[in-house]
Length: 507
Ligand code: BG6
Image (cartoon, rainbow, N blue to C red; front, side, top):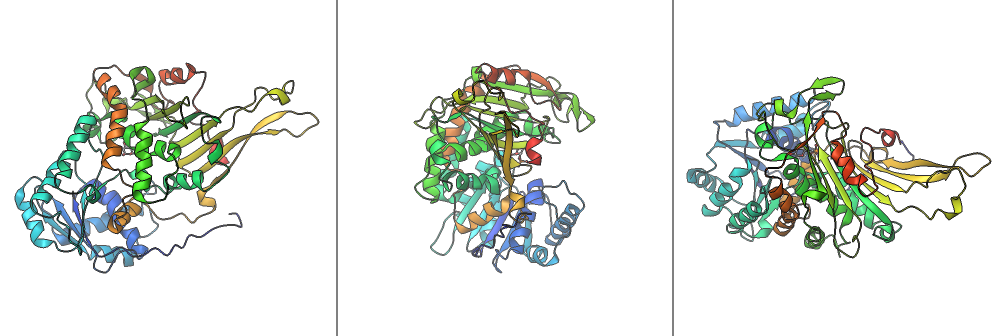
């Protein structure tokens, strides 16, 4: 641990009293992420005494039964270090705080009676959390609107958190926006993208705009290209039913990868005011030239090996068609048509069952002028690369050229960097804490606005349409991706940073 270890003790105010209504109370998201997030918020003293949760589920659940189930699930996290939330022990104080405030009711999401019952039970501030399948987003918001549950007063806010996927293409996203905005104001809707709940994604703005040495070179005059990678080693797991009609493009690109893209490429906002930030994001996404199939690769994993074990092909996963053409991998070349980035390609790739678990942004700078080092044994001057690492080990690493010790001028590339964990206590978060807290506080900065979502879908819509019947290229599970993705960069004389390269992990 360096001497300059910093402990963050912000004076964060408590959220106002409110009821959190969770549609999908018995679902996976509630168990895996929402409850741990509430537990962490309670642990930080950020929930008001009058905070409460009302779960709604189509299955019959009782308050006591639900409390017991969730207590068991929370306990099970102590035995599973690979869970999104893991703790050595569950502290009975914060968990007791949450547990005692849990209530549940049975209700059909498309039945008027559910919303009538809710209207009879709810007063004051309410956050409605739609932890349900996307097909219920519209019906639930309509149900809330018709029952008068979205009417706000000076003393009571009514807000709705909507999970992803928000639409499945441009037309459906527009239609969903229209449906929900017929029931309430834009400011009441909080469209979630959990990448924005990641501390290190939020920190990208600080890295860019709080360090004067970076901003002048963060543009086309100095940057050659940018790589954005979200590589996973896991397969589709038990999510075949969701994944089959979705695929990697819809699942990851216009949402998560574009969030990383906006953070790394947007213009500095005038302030951290939510609308100032979201205006800049929309401006950036609107400047993306719509992607065409020539600039894209779609892949699907075949059988292979992952972590020393044989793993099946995507087509042999549960709930997946034997002749499925759903992509589990996508690589894109994006062009951004604005003053800062014109001519700088942004290469994005994401996939499942790849050689490495890694989410990062790599900014490749143009090489230094060669003249001074001509004739030395430096080989080609390696361009500087700044890697901003999000997962699994958040931090940053920059490749620099230095002189190798010895009598002659020989160059070597070294890596210099830092890990967040070396400077800050690892915060016990699952990423949803900030999002739930911000919604209760009425701060939509980390949520997607209607226009940003529509602009994002617009950028990939030509590809979605063109890919309706397109074949996929196969890659063996455990590989860095299909060969065609390498060709996409090779065409421009560039190559991806290797996946599976662990050098930075040791930096
Ligand atoms: C989800 C996708 O939104 O993000 C998953 O539906 C994906 O398919 C996940 O695995 C990746 O998130 P993270 O935080 O694990 O990188």
